[in-house]
Amino acid sequence: MTFKVAIFDLDMTLWDGEKLYDDTVKILQHMKNNNVHMYIASFHSAAPLVIKDLGIINYFKEIHYGMFCSKACMIERILQKHPNVKKNEVIFFDDNLPNIKDVSKKHGIHTVLIINGIKWDNVPISFLQKKFNLFFRNMK
Ligand SMILES: [Mg+2]
Image (cartoon, rainbow, N blue to C red; front, top):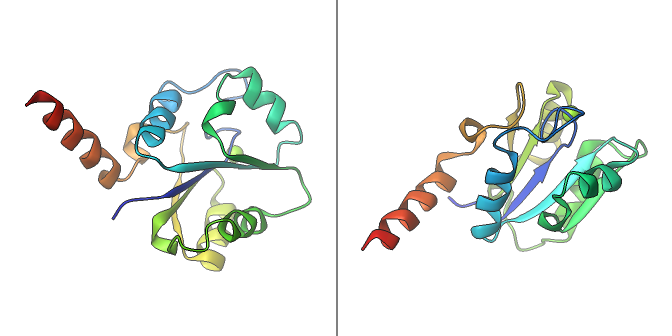
């Protein structure tokens, strides 16, 4: 299985309030290399500014943010943009367990609970297999 759409929470998932976590850019770049459509779903009212300041804005197709829509509601809007993408091809990363539970229940997409910031360990093996296949192909 390969993922086609990845949705990320911002605070305590991609950054700690001061800086990006060590693996954040590597993971975003890896997904970009694998043509994954990436989105932000954040309650942070200044999410676009933060993402711009952090230098990662170009990775994302859209930033869904603010307090007027739940994570499940933001993801509903994102899924509407990809009518041909199956639920098992969408992945959501968040450090908040109620968000994870709600999104999982309402959308049935793959969810990952982030603890102490996103790390390679949080990225499903299918992404990593692609990475290693690519590595071996480049070796030949
Ligand atoms: Mg968060």
